[in-house]
Image 1 (spheres, helix red, strand yellow):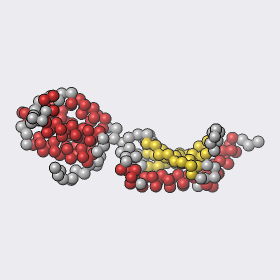
Image 2: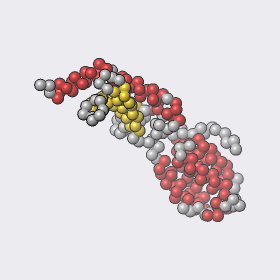
Image 3: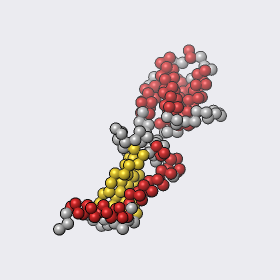
Image 4: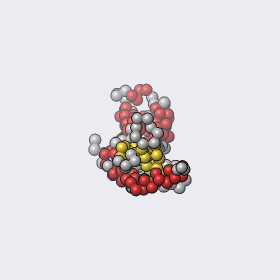
Length: 216
């Protein structure tokens, strides 16, 4: 009678014979190299070159009503800090039948890289609580500045980092040429802090082209 260990050994030998581990790594490599996936932010803010794959193992799914038995080969994904003391950020899974034919594959990101941006967005909301309502009127001198700051927050939250940095530049230029006494001081202080938070964050993480000229 075949024991559980015998069955496990046979299945493991079959996976090795079908070279499923290498097939999974090849599938993942193709996905990471696809530029369109970067454009669509499939990698949740991570640079695909920084994603470190680590083979996790095989899973055999045999008892499935109306579906053939499958083998799932999983690769765990880690961020730029590697696997030491850092949890995985996602996984890639290749699903094949027991003949090695590919049925499907799955790429799942379980974490976003830029979780610290939540603090910036929170500050953005807090800052808007002290925004004088009159500044939203076009005939107020502060209207242009408020528009810049609002666009910084909106674009940053949408991960349009280059565009957000462009309006950081415009807001800074505006403040250089405008008397600070014309502003509500609480709003001015909070908005300046917000602009600095965004700029520091984008520069630190190399998320924006800081040399990009601001062509209006």
